[in-house]
Image (cartoon, rainbow, N blue to C red; front, side):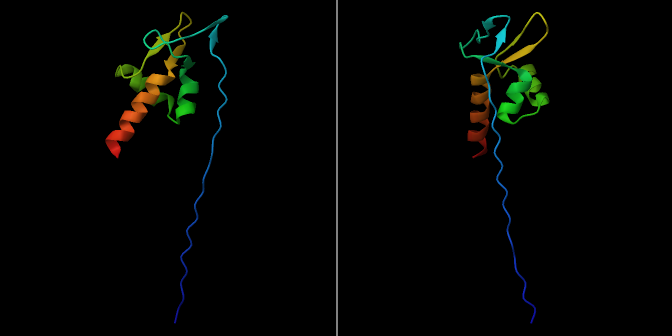
Length: 93
């Protein structure tokens, strides 16, 4: 008689992102629509676990608040991204 064992291995990872105030020059950037502090697009992508491509698609679909600076840098409203994420999760479950 052959005995087989089944082993389940779960790996839990954790990512910590430190975000300090976002400034252009000496000014912190705030969202014009909801007054939340804005983050650079690449930091927003890392923070929410998205690729930069997803962030830019959300911008193109006009689903999140954003601001483009004179130096062509994109800043994202973290509150609007969180709202999109919440809405998506509610639709899935």
